[in-house]
Image 1 (cartoon, rainbow, N blue to C red):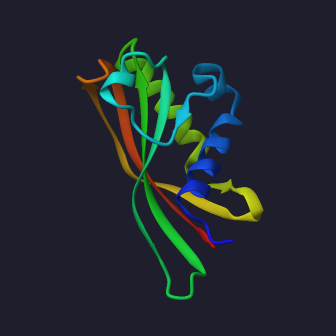
Image 2: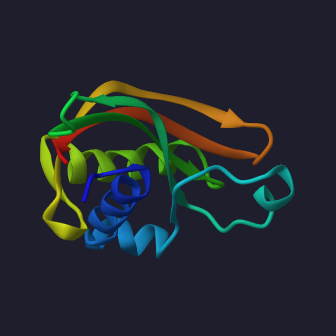
Length: 136
């Protein structure tokens, strides 16, 4: 089975939720997309959002590489968002992220996080980018 966006996000989500420190902060709130403006006000925080940025693969579909923007959000403030990002970084950086059907990805941070306040969600965030490379 070739890896795809769904497999990649599922693998990252499962990998992050397997880390007790992350799960204790977010419960199961690791999502593969941002919320609509109507939904944003009702979502519990803190949380993690994984958004596929771009990627590619070789001609024979032997390997693929994807950039994933990792957002951590907090209603409490930028400190909590940064602390959650640090936990995510520790879980992903230079680590092997396993996926269903034995597909594995190597995760490497390619862009250090920026911080800010999202006016639509009224929540603080940190956003960094990871490259996940693996066999298909």
